[in-house]
Image (cartoon, rainbow, N blue to C red; front, side, top):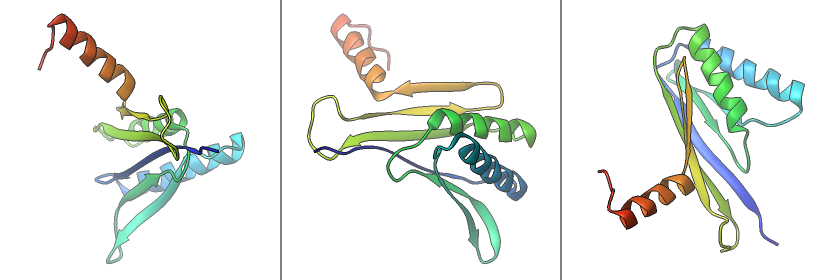
Amino acid sequence: MANYYSLFSVILDKIPQKAATWLINKISDYEEKEEITICNMQMLVKNKIFTGVWLWSDETFDMEALSECIQEMLIKFNINKAVSIEWAETCSRPRAASFGGGWVVVAQKEIVWGSTYSAAREAVEALTTGNMKL
């Protein structure tokens, strides 16, 4: 039997501790209400100084919900930055079409998505038609 995993890990630094605390509470409340797991979370502190919040998955995650929570935090605390997250989709056995991944960039006004599949397909098309833009 094969096991499928969706994995990511990102540290949100350069955000106020108040915003990080709010984000962790928002995600926790969402998870409890919807009875799902969005991701794992941990506040990062070094020498008693807040340095960021670590978000990650061990097996699966809900990137759409996470992206919406991050966007809401950016708006609420007027944080003018974009957050990028990449993820991998893997399988415990070498099976065709069982590996890939994606990315998301979250900003106050927009969330943009992409996948390794679509990027590879675009590159194949560009290379076979001679329309490769570097």
